[in-house]
Length: 414
Image (cartoon, rainbow, N blue to C red):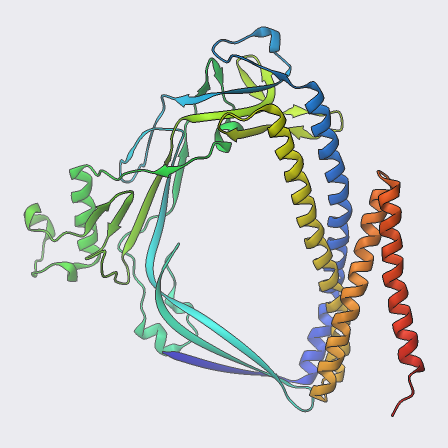
């Protein structure tokens, strides 16, 4: 089933919205500029903090006993992170000894997808045609059918849920690395989760079965006014255990709207490597002279030099990612500021598209130039040579814009 909505926006409304969007464009420009400036400084702070930490870190060769000689020092240690804590799911009673237990819930629901197409009209108006379609799929939360755009879909595709349940996770509070206790922030950093096999207690299974049949009595193969009076062995199966998955519904092979699928994962004890400041029989983050904190935990037995090398690589990768995000925000900000020009020209659709494309090109060049200027000014404080090169590139891009504009002015009109 498909449903189509057509929305027409007048030229004056589009123009008013575009002028209103200028404020948003200015905000995007400021946020992008601020992010670029902060990012360059943070990269250098993190790099310097890692170099400082690398120069001070010492090897804690054995974690089998607490060594007071290392108290207050930045150490690198490896060992087996273990716990005696038993973790349990409060609803299903599933659990065991481990570092973390996680429950993930999915619901089989009717979902709405949309696809929009915009068409510019002579006179500057704009027509938006949106087509909505509907299909069943597994999703992370129940879908409210009242939000469907199609009136018919709200009636035909009614969503239900056999259980009202959410995701859940719990971590061990007591995790040891030999004689040392891991701090909560270190426990949260331990990975390596594995599927945890479901093994429901019979009483829990019966409780879930009765609750589900009350929510959806049509699953009963016969009519009854009181489910509690029906012998357990005569109740239909609506709870299935499949490895680490608990399926609630009539048949896992044929999902129906309202069925629930729950998966369980446990993080077991494992070998880890860490870099942190020793504090008595536990650890805390190392605070560098510039205020940056350093604390690293990696799965497996990893040498100290490799851990620091990985942190330096991660710092560079995050910096480049934020550079891209900041630059994109600046470009989008400038493009939004220029948006009224394209709307003004869109009285003639072809002219509007040409102006929009030109505004996009100018926004990209200006945005890149401005981003390079901000990054280069930031780098001038730390690395003058690199900052100077970046400023030169930015100046070249501005010059290209100037020459392009001058050429456009000198070109005789037809």
